[in-house]
Image (cartoon, rainbow over all chains, first blue to last red; front, side):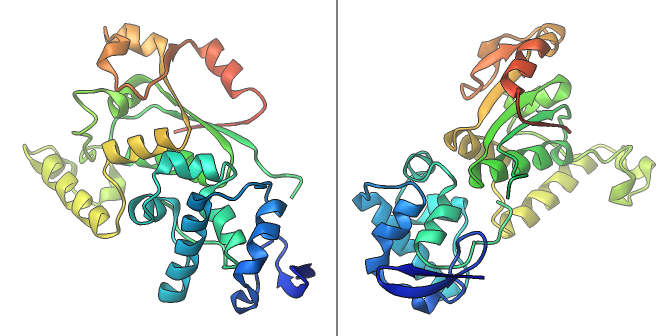
Length: 105
Length: 155
């Protein structure tokens, strides 16, 4: 576990950079978290995905996989990979302050 | 984290349902993890990207001890079709995409799709017989060039 400061707030992350306590996350942290994952220019589509991740996690207790994102977030699979080249569900979960989604497909 | 796999190339050589899904799942998972991924279809694996056949990939009900079905029974007409329908139904319930849908999704994720030249020649096929997601028909040497620097898995 690592203690880090994001947007002037202390947060705890695991070795892979996922929030240990999702309740520590606020939207103000998003630009800084995105930059840590190499995303410097956040578009509306990025925000759509990040908010969708967050909402799904709060509703279901787990973040969506890429397939669910493609079906339900309103952003296509192709675009998801353009927005988050290092893995849409994984990177968006990191930026949304939720655990890494578990699911094989 | 230094041992992270950055690139993954998967060879799919079988044209059965149980032969096709594992490689597809691994390719999809590799892309979801941000790895570079390539799929190479050889021999009967070409059926997975064959325009006329990829919607009809079946479970092998003969010579498949894992199915726990007597071989004589597995060979009866319709058994493979029924078993495939049963399996597809179960997968649909788990929200696992059908093969054509899955292939589409993996291609959209930016995974490379290649057909094996020797197999295409052997079966008398042309690039046009394969789905448009297949970027090229390549030789084994070209495959090794594309796969260079990454892990290779044969399924």
